[in-house]
Length: 92
Image (cartoon, rainbow, N blue to C red):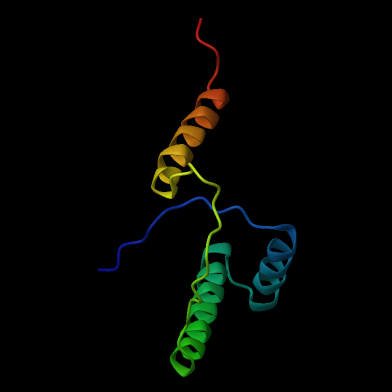
């Protein structure tokens, strides 16, 4: 039995247009068309990656003195919490 993952995806306008065109052309539903497109895209990407391995070129970050790069995740967490709180309705 294959389990499905439910998630919310925000599509950009051009992607939505291509997806709707594909749905109309193939006469398939949204879910099936989206899954087919993702499957084809990831399979194509996997084929390309097998032919040439992905490489990362290291370079100096050039951070200013006193900035601790190991604390970036904590800063990102604080900013995320602040954004979440700003979206909550005010307490009575």
